[in-house]
Image 1 (cartoon, rainbow, N blue to C red):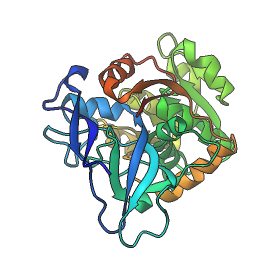
Image 2: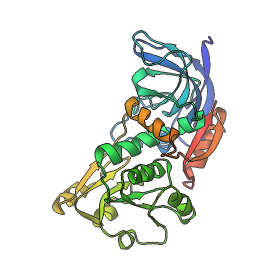
Image 3: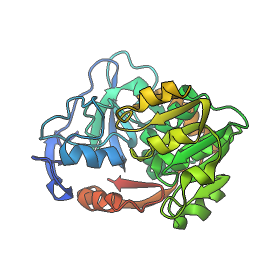
Image 4: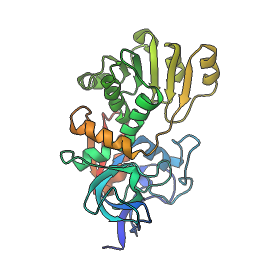
Length: 319
């Protein structure tokens, strides 16, 4: 067993160029934890925001307040050690998870340790890249659509940034619950979104969202900028979920005055939900789109690509 591992770290906040490959000690699992030899790690917008200066988690910064640190939460790999008390997994099991969020997990590294119940098994027919692309985006979509909004059949759901990592999964989960789903995205992503089940696609660059949507029961703003516009098209009693930086100032009071609801949201680790999500992927109910892969040492290039804002689906680092 090696005593050191490759990891991506940064010594200062800044652009993608601050990310660099280093050697770090291999972590040891404590009781109730497993150690995962990481084979793939997902790249998320929150990674780029934390890298740039710790923003992106609202008021929940965990221990990501000052460098040096290693970003990344989405991981897939193989269990290579288990701490005392762990009964759910054994050495050799393939697992995936979103450990420790929003505290530092160090996902851009060859080994990660975390509580076993923050992971789930990867089905045999699901590859590691797909598994690594899934946890944060799918858990966010699931916890918003199912747990927070409790979307019901025939409700009208509006998803901003429907072509992104979270958005394209939220579309599918809302459709699986029988909703009528409208999504905003650039025109080049519309055909792919319709293929995933989207009922109406709106080009946010050329169309007026208020004119295009009609009355909405649930709106999910993944852009941080469309809260007010979403509230304007919402039915009384409807719910607006603002991700990831919380509810804009003054919007709660406006929603209350109009008989509508608004809430912030931050995803939580959930191994039970990940087990269900893995089953949906294995049964081809849920499709995770991979926009591209990069080797671990090219993490900076992956961040540059993500920050262009044009990817459809998820980017993944391979180890």
